[in-house]
Structures are given as structure tokens and as C-alpha cells.
Length: 539
Image (tube, rainbow, N blue to C red; front, side):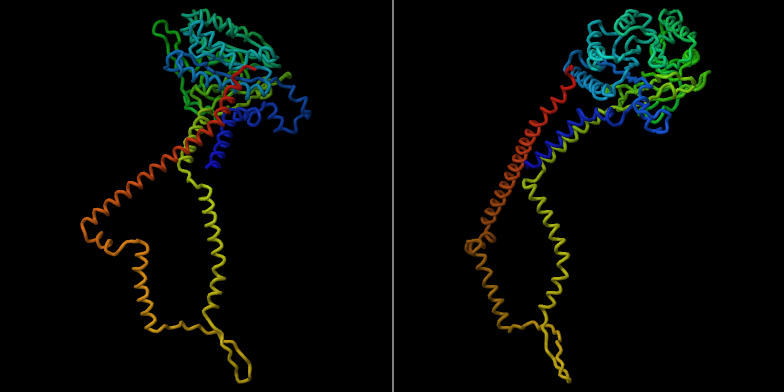
């Protein structure tokens, strides 16, 4: 039993190490790498053969979106309740581990967030908003990143400032966002590529609104800036695509078609999952991007748009949180060219992208639960002499194999024992050995009768020696009614003893399982707590 306990301790330790630590190392060490390096390894005949010179031709950008830090608006749970605190802790911990173990080890030069940093951003009080903002900075290690050379850029989302209707009636929400994250519409350069960040929530708002007017004025100014630098359009809400458009092989949820909800009071937008077709076409024609990056949908989607300047690919990046309806959280790696690109119609020369998947946290917890059930079953059902039991099976198999090989030899030996050889001389004086079967000896009838009588005499004697009771007692049990009562009492006592024996076996097994569970917990609970908090503490 202790051997089984030791094996289960090792299995649980390996499971916890993988689920709480090693699984988050897989993207940075195995499944994910910068796209320009992947292109380099797949194109050995490239004109640049120097392994050290080639990587410097690109700037590394990590793209993250839709963390939606959980708050009192996320679930139907009481604010500050224990259940809500536990959910928030494990959700924040997942994204912090993803940042520390999956994203930052890849050493990005730029980190780009595509919006929805809060869950109930527009309706949170200033105190609640500040608390969520502090949690956001902690889980993405922004305090440490701010002291390094890594640049961080933000894009507003609908969960941060709301849709057009909220922005129109609650301008203080927009001011609160801009105070911490910076402007909603701006342009920045990475390498030789320009990134155009647009507040998508106000694009389809009323033309009389100041925020909508400011967003379109920014887009017009970008369109007047004629240069030869390729552009990447950044918008939280994806551009319009026809209903039923294919999203590519990486999408795991059903495709959501266009849906726009207007307010009854002033017809401002209260919800939209895509930018309208008219606004999408204007953006593509005015900005002239080689690539579009978006979020909002929480799932991966890749589509190709047709504009006046040709085909434009859009990547909708999935959420980085495991609590936002996507079982396969992800982030994107983007390599922006550090060299002048002459062919602006080709996005492959200017930017290269690669989608990276994070561990499926739900599957990890399901495996924990399955292993716990399996552990209980093994500890309860494992035989007392489990090692001897398996040794007996192996010995039985060996005896069967040995018996198969020895059967032929035994047959030949038995044939020699049941025969005799007789010497015969022929007329020429030559001797021959002739094999003859032995005749079974026949016993006289008197001997058989004596044996039979002997057997008959022996049987009662053996019975007396076994039972140690006179014959009268036997006949009493059979023929006397009182003897039947004694037999029933003995049967009841036997059943009672059997029941008590089974109860003792169950109790012993429960105690044995409890002792083994205590040992397994004593070894693995401290390991789990250490793994749980080693990434949570600021470094």
C-alpha cells in the first residue's frame, strides 16, 4: 500500500508542476516564436545568411487583448464575497502567469493592448476603477516593464469607455480613461511601420457628437499624410464582414453575424459587434493599411477585406483570459520591418504575424478533478496484498508458459513408463528389442472387496475425527425439531459474523485510504501553495 501511495505522490507532484508551471513555459520554449525567425528557418536560401544580422531587421511586438479584469459586474455574486474573490484571484493569476512565463520570456520590444482592460469600466466608481487598474498593472507586470526599454501602447475598448451612447452621456468616463491610458486616437511608429490607433466605439456615433467628430478628424489627418511607410490599423471592434464569413482554422466558437443595437431615445449605438459597412470601407480607403488588428470578439478570426487599394487582411485576436468564453486563450506575435519596404501592397514584407495559444486552464482543472477521483478509487479498492496479488498473476503466467513447453517432454516420459522392452533373436542370431505395453495388474475380487470395505470403515472414522461429536448428535440435528432451531441459530450467527467482518473490512479500507490521502496531501499541498504564489508575488 505504501508503494501505491508513493507512486500517487509522484503522479500528483508531476501533475501540479505541469499544470501550474510547465504548461505556461510551452509557448515561449516550444510552440511559439517570432514570425521573422520562423520565416528565416523555413527559407535557408534567404539573401541574408547571417543569423545575428537578420533578427535586427525586425522589431518584436506582442499583441494582447480583452483581459477584462473581473469586478462586481462580472458575475451574479455579491461584491467582496469570498466566491468572487476566489474567481478574481484565479483569473488574475492565469494572466499574470501567461505574462511572466509565456510573453515576457520572448523579450518583446513593444507590447500592444487592443482594449477591454476592465469588465464594467464605465459604471465603476472611481475607487473601484482604481482598484481594477492596480490589478491590471500587477497581472501584466507593468511596473517592471515601465522601468525597462519595452514600450507599451493602449487602445480603448467598449468595456473601458462604453459604446457611443455611453460616451455621449458620460464624458467623465472618457476623461478618466485618457488620464491613465493616454489619447484614444493616435499614431506611433515601430521600426519602419506606422500603427494607427482608432477609437472604434465612436466611429458610428452621431455626427453631432464631439467624440465622433474628433475620431474622424484624426482619420482624415492620417489620410492626408502621404508617405511610403506601410500602416497597420488598430481598432478594438472588428471591421464589417458579410454574415457567415469564414474565420479560418483557429476559431473555436460559432461565428457571430452583424448586430447593432440603437438607443430608443437618441438612436445612439448601445451595442455593436462589428463596425458598420460604411465606416469600415471609409477606414480602409482613407488609412490604406496593409494589415488590420482587432479584438472584441474574444475568439480568433482571420478575414480578407477588399478595398480600393487591394486586399487587406484583418486578424481578430482572441482574449488572453480563460474566463471570457474562449477555452483556448491566445496572444499574437508581430514582427514589424525595420527596413524600408518599397512594395506597400504586400503586407508580408512589412509585417509578419504568428498566433500563440496559452494553456487551457479549464482542461487542467478537469484533469485535477479526474485524478482526484482516480486516487480515491485506487486507495479504496486496492487489495491489501496488492504487490503479492500482482506477483501471483505474473507467477501464474510464467507457470502457464512453462507448462506449454514441458507438455511434450512429459508425454514422451509417460509413454516410456507405461511400456516394456522384450529381447527377440531371429534365425540368423540377431537380437531385436520389441516395445510392448505393460498389462495393468488385476487384483483379486477379495482384495477389491477388502479395499471397498476398508474405505467404508474409514469414512465414519474420519467424520468422527473431524466433527468430534457422536453420531447421535448428527441424527438429532436432522430428525429432532429442536435440532433445526439450533441449526438456524448457527446460520444467523454465521451471517452476523460475516456482516461484522465486512464492516471491519470497509472501516479498515477507509482508514487506510485516509492515511494515504493524508500523506499525499502533506507532500503536494505545500508544493501547490508554493507554485500558486511564486508568480503572484512581485519580483
